[in-house]
Amino acid sequence: MLTEDGKHYYVSPDEYNNLVEKLAIKVHLSHWQFDTILCLARGGLRAGDILSRIFDKPLAIMSTSSYRAEGGTVQSTLDIAKYITTPQGVIGGRVLLVDDLADSGVTLGRVIELLRSSYADITELKSAVLWTKAKSSFIPDFSVETLATNPWIHQPFETYDRMTPEQLLAKWKV
Image (cartoon, rainbow, N blue to C red; front, side, top):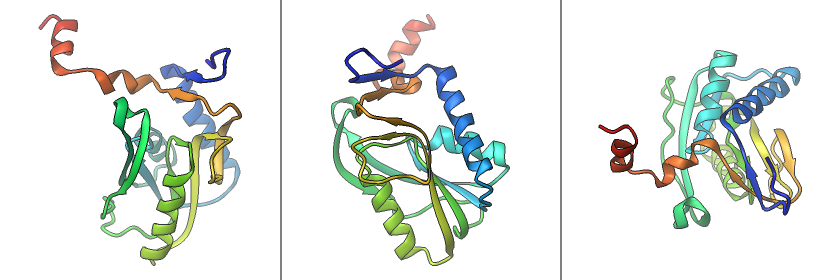
């Protein structure tokens, strides 16, 4: 649900899953065949996992981090993991890169640049996200929604960003 001022977009768990399914349909209808899904952790983990199950393709993971300050709401320096975790040992072939969104576009742009320059075994690379913000400098190959007002997206699992084990104990009265 987008707020009236267009500054916040609240996503329910059902809506999130529906968006991932719509992304799967877009990729499927493109008739592009890929060998591996590479998701960017943390944001792309959930969507990447679901797409991996739908398409029955191996899931590779690359960790990136730039939203660390203020409970994950302020972007800082982009860190990209040195290694990719993949069941094949080395990532290659046709790769679908999955993240949750193209916000500024910096992360996706830099990751694609790195993959093209440092992973010669990747023969083809396309990107897929749930949301693309209008301000993004990177336009993914597949996207479900374009957000003209560049709102802050409140994803259903973000409640865990501020939750502690002690709060869980109190919640479940353990």
